[in-house]
Amino acid sequence: MALTDTTTPHDVALNTDLYELTMAQGFWESGMLDVHGCFTVFFRDNPFGGGYAVACGMGQIADLVRNFVFDEASIAYLASLEAPSGGPLFKRGFLDYLRDFHLRVSVWSVAEGELAFPREPLVRVEGPIIDCQLLETALLNLVNFQTLVATKASRVVYAAEGHPVSDFGLRRAQGPDGGLAVARASYVGGASSTSNVLAGKVYGIPVFGTHAHSWVMAFPTELDAFRAFAASSPKNCVLLLDTYDVHQGIKNAVVVAREMEEAGEHLAAVRIDSGDLAKLSKETRRAFDEAGLPSVKISASNDLDEYTIQSLFAQGAPIDSFGVGTKLATCDPQPSLGGVYKLSATRPAASAAWEPVMKLSEMSYKRTIPGIQHVRRYVDASGCPVGDMIVDDAYDMGGTLMVDAVDDLASFDLAGYEAHELLVELVREGRAVGEGEGIEAARTRCRDALMHLDPAVRRFLNPQIYPVGIEEGLARVRRELALREHSGSRRG
Image 1 (cartoon, rainbow, N blue to C red):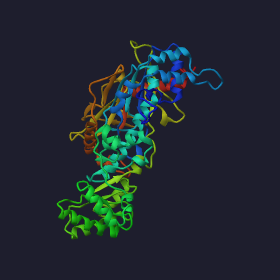
Image 2 (image 1 turned 30 degrees about the horizontal axis):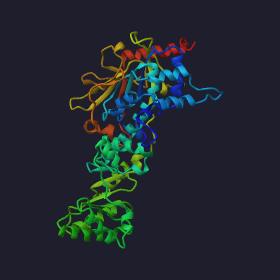
Image 3 (image 1 turned 90 degrees about the vertical axis):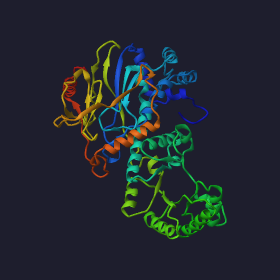
Image 4 (image 1 turned 45 degrees about the horizontal axis):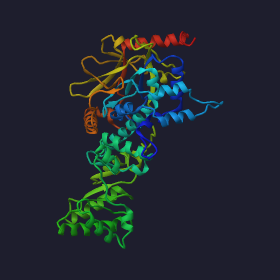
């Protein structure tokens, strides 16, 4: 949670939209404590106009569930809220109910670092409907942003063609929590390090950084500054060249690099943070090679993203590593994933059968998929994913034909391909399942998944659409529900 002295881990329960609490009070007052719901988290469009998303944030869901309690300070705050027309917003009996509240939900999700696609469940939550409803906002807050950042990072890393990418986005991130989330998700998405020291401590991510322009400006000359930094940090010496003039900066860096060699040390790299990075990197490479210092690397920064990095390599820029800040931390040009949390089934009690439900809309694009959904991912002999089928076991016809998740007239046959289950259980009735994974496992999974993804789906420009569909039996249920809803049987 927030990094201030006024919040505690328990405040996750108040990190929510007010209507989650007013609905919870309504369920409580309506005698619906035994009613169960099933909710799914999904997004409707791939971010950044791409062909995929990288699932992220799932590694923190079990902690979110465990810490979701209302302490006395939270209860006191809720008791102080007044309704717009007067009187307390929350009833005393409901606040007493929250005082002893713990989430009793079960949660399944796509494994962190795995690839995900539109319409399929990223996360499925089952349990008492009041519990599921209270969890909505905090869960979306956790998964939406980190999935967006991990996807952006994976695109930047792909453009970098194996050269290290460091997250430099802390100072431009949306607050302290945002900076931590960016560092964590960027690492899952393939970044090699972060400038965020707290993220290094909390998550074990490698940290990286050297000096800024202010260091150079604090000394009488740039050469003095370079020499002082080399003396102070000979094992971590990267010199920033563009404080005054890059051309002179190159010359001064060559001087210091030679002096370091004579002292038995080595200049690790130089960094260029402005100007024509392609042209200046070529000039820098030539100068160090001619000086007999080919081991000195070149790093670049300055509002980079996947497209500028691609352009630099297309121009033959001899850049060895990248610091990517603002456009990674802010997920430019797409500020949100748009993930939603929708009710897909209900039952009157834990022992009863589930009844699928769906949301209709004037826009067919926003209609939901009903049922207790899970996902079968089909892969070819090389391990390349070829399609994802959304399934409810209660209606599964056992075939390989699936109906497109948006267009009922389109279908795909996945016969001949091997399938595996995509969702994994994270929480069972409020308790974590197993020990959980570390961030390195998620990072490795992301790398392997992207390596096996069809390049046509991974490309930036007009990527091929990855097939996601609904199993035949579930598709039939969806059509029947839509007809029933239109007839007014539930609306009446």
